[in-house]
Image (cartoon, rainbow, N blue to C red; front, side, top):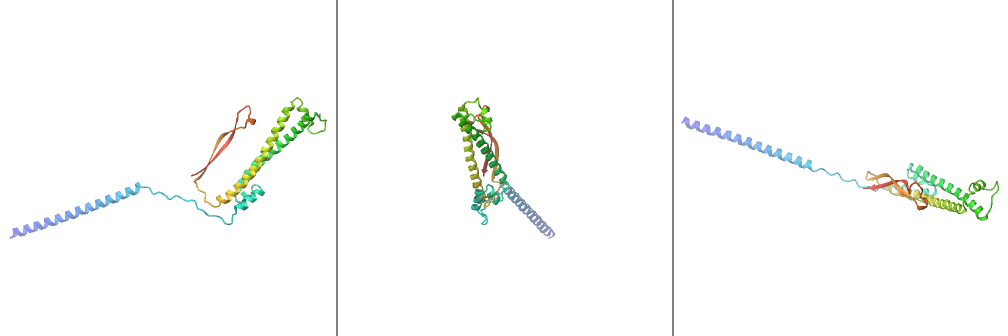
Length: 227
């Protein structure tokens, strides 16, 4: 009888131990599977970088800022439209360009007047006396052929005319720039997508402007890139 009790006790103890081991094994497997899923999800998330949304250009017009006023002010006085656009740094650039053109215009006009009068003296066979206009210049170019005097007169006349056209062109560009700035720069956000590159370059001279040194003149190349 005692043997049966001992046998039943051994069987029950064995079943309890086996059940405990099964629960521990199942618990370990579940924990390992859970860790594996967590690590895999982390690796998957890390391997796929999140793309940042691209910032779009936002249209935000300023109803109080008129492009018409900007262009009309620049048409009346160069640089006034840029002041109206609150872009004050452009005003010295505009007047530096117009001042340079004005200097060449006055210089070419003076030289044209000089050689025009000398050409009149040569054509009419007049020898100016002391006190008359360009008396010293006439004596200075006494040994120069008349055709050379005529050619130089035409050269300075052509330079004067080209300078006048460039001056009107610069004035017009000043007006267009004021209008564009008032229309777009005040209406759209400006971000890093707009870049500018400045590089040295060579510009071909015109045939009549060739010198003995080189047929090229140095210049600057400005490139704007909108990405």
